[in-house]
Length: 312
Ligand SMILES: [Zn+2]
Ligand SMILES: [Zn+2]
Image 1 (cartoon, rainbow, N blue to C red):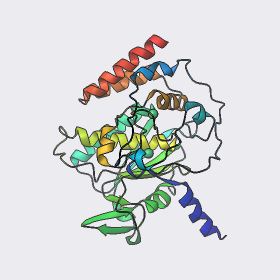
Image 2 (image 1 turned 180 degrees about the vertical axis):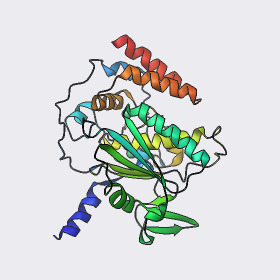
Image 3 (image 1 turned 90 degrees about the vertical axis):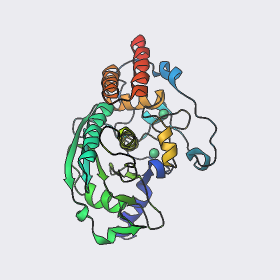
């Protein structure tokens, strides 16, 4: 097989559509970086948090799990298989803004940076917006009246080609709509796990956002999309048992229903992977949720913190 074709084949195999277009992750796991050797930072039993888990009800038509087979991923399976975790060399999350963002967008994206730092407890670098002129005509199209950008070009030709040395993941957020292939209408986000690159768009989230005060839904959506995709880039798979940030979603309606927090098992994966302090993380999440008027999140994190504090 020619090198070029081999490269294309690799892209097809390892590129996984994320979130609303999330496809089940079927690729063979072969990158064995950090395999199993990492001990948990604390000895807390995360199963104590199970009492806060809400079981998913039986899926109905129109929901992700009705049409998609998910294998699930236990904590044990996660730590014994491929995963990407921060280390002394690669530990920064880069967020690249591509397109045109007004003052309201920039206010929301500034909050997104703060939230992403708190969620992963890693340094986040948000780069100044660049024009989407960097995407050539052949990788753009019009769908209805909206100009769309081709995700593959952004992942392979922009993000992978400009992967910072210290990056854990390199992600783009576009103002324009996205499409992954000609046969698709659009896509909300896409990631290439092995490449540790991902892209999502704010285009379909902004409706009803008139100013920075009433933009909490818009902000919540982009926060959930970004953290969901980065979790995938750490090789965390879809969660199929409990209401969780890592649930797959087939529509905006379904995505809006899922929480911004992780179930106990997915949280255990994140804490194990990032080796962070779970109580300090809760403190920051409670503060952020209160400061930004998300009382349901603040309440959930307070309950979680109380349970975990008892466990220490
Ligand atoms: Zn997903
Ligand atoms: Zn979960």
